[in-house]
Length: 576
Image 1 (cartoon, one colour):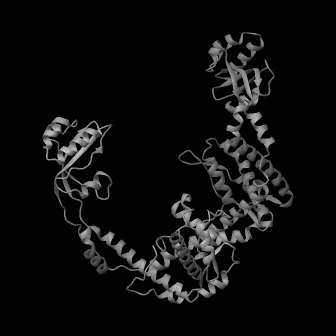
Image 2 (image 1 turned 135 degrees about the vertical axis):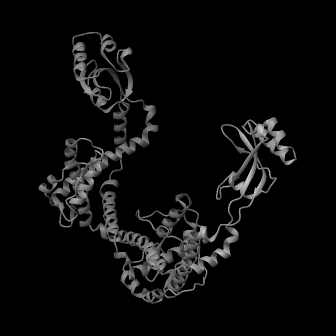
Image 3 (image 1 turned 60 degrees about the vertical axis):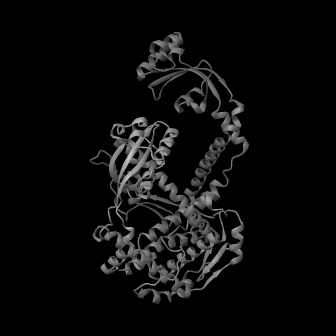
């Protein structure tokens, strides 16, 4: 909502004095204004991207194109309010309170890494047609072969020996194999490589026709395969498979480019590892049976990459524990440790390179972090500064109760008549008859299929649930004698209800709703304080709206956002 001037009973003493500091805030935090700037608040820009992200946050991406002047004005009003509150919060040092600095640093790293990935990996990884075709030829190549499976390795060796001795493959399959294909001699015909178990595919497509190989462990046991014939892929499947093939080709290119980049970075950024510390972090069995890693502490350093980037013992232990949760065996957990460490070091190698290139200080990154900081400090300011100054007295709560108690009615008790029928058509006919004055009991005896048929259709007394939908909402509004529209019953049945009697239950006592009264009065007082703050802040600030950019935004399509950081909504202020 866009706040009007609201009276409130107590002054917010720190606010007026703090607002005088806005000039200093602007001077200390001013950045170069981007070309997409829509408004400038004390030297701080609000951009098209800020408004786009607000649209996505409030309404979802589907509505980002709905840019009526009124909608954009509300968004801009709220964005200006966010900036003003953020500036005041920074004056008070709220941006320095945990966990905000840590959150910003994590996002700085994430953004710097994403830029490096885009520049060195994602951008150059666009696959060519020849790569896409090669993956199609590989994944959709077809094979016909025999597979015979035993429950253990020794059984599979006996199958292999029998085949090599020249025993008929069909006989061996029927007598010794546990595979579902045993009744057809183990024959699997014309299956594409992509549809086979990886271990089987890797074996079959290395064989020549009639060549025997195995045993290999599969999901059924131990298998022996005999290649029969091979065919190329069905060309008619290419266009249908193209999107998947392009994704796979891109993934392969990205993997290759990443490995090449990492190999080069190893020579550019020295990597030091504290092997003693790494070896000291062993899996520990918890009472619930899961494995955990005891951290050597956040101040310890497991690895150092270049001059700026480190991997703490705490970070390494967290990564180990996340992986060890899925590993029941301690030896397997220990074996996973070097892989996890290598992945963490590789990530930090990329981060060190991103920092070396200065990606963490790019204007787009600084703007994204500033927006995120605003998102974090606004709710903190609202709760710890503005809300902390709002007090609600018993007298205010009781006065508000007296003002509103007419709307605090208890839900009524109703006595219902009920007739259940098998079809909507019959239910509508019964409802029309009731409205025309027909007797409930007579209609229930003739039509109803439920247990109230022999009771004249009388259901008895019940309390209507407040705030409900459907039947409950209809009962809250229905008068005595009203027949409701049919509603679905159990299965395919339909139910017609008639309100036979209605008893009002009076209003809730003050004691029963005092908590609601406190919340309502607090919300009213807080809204007034917030409104006064916004008006005071606006009156003391320099706010420039670039009407030409705003007008162009109303006519344009969805803008492309330069980074992944958002500027979401914050509570009540400025929402329409």
